[in-house]
Image (cartoon, rainbow, N blue to C red; front, side):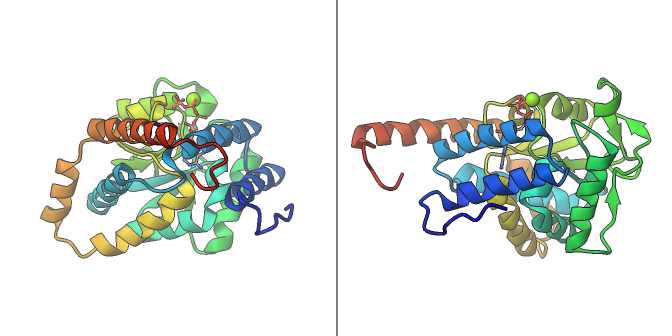
Length: 260
Ligand code: ATP
Ligand code: MG
């Protein structure tokens, strides 16, 4: 990995870029994943590269929903494995969820590389999706493969950084679908039951914390959190947040401003 000077004003952004490049070089991340990452970065600028209130609200609802679920599954793709492998394994543990490698551009080598990376953080972790035998209806062969013990029978699925078409197909199967997506306008963001508009590198650590906090609540309290949650309102609030933030920046002037 290229060494980035800690003093660089955009250190973290460059650091995660290098992680994505390294993920590609190690056979986990697809080339198109690099482009998807860049699109995410652009939206991260708009929200100020921090966790905003609507995302915090969405994360609470997701954690509550997962704690209530019968067969919760967290899907892992090449970008996720490059950016947050350790956190993915920890989150699955904290939420008692299964992990499934599920790829838009599926190749056996890529699946193996991702499973290996996750295994580094917990040698005992069970990884599904290695030999998927089921298919998501409405998606062509390679894109639709899922594990019978994982996404196929799941009631609640977290599909971060996912394509809109696949998100929609999972919703069509009757799953409760959750996504992490920095773009509030993407099809995934609009199709999911809960959308966390945040960078996954901030969202996963926060969700691990929330799992610890909400674990002790009664079922009824968890159910109330989920019932009171409104994803349409969350997405509207994200857009309003971005609008207000940009309006304020435009008013104050951003010319040669050091911090945004
Ligand atoms: P859609 O198909 O849902 O309309 P898309 O075609 O723009 O979206 P995809 O490549 O299918 O994009 O999905 C990747 C999504 O993940 C993008 O919306 C992108 O903004 C988002 N994304 C990329 N990197 C991150 C990240 N680190 N954290 C959160 N979201 C991210
Ligand atoms: Mg897409």
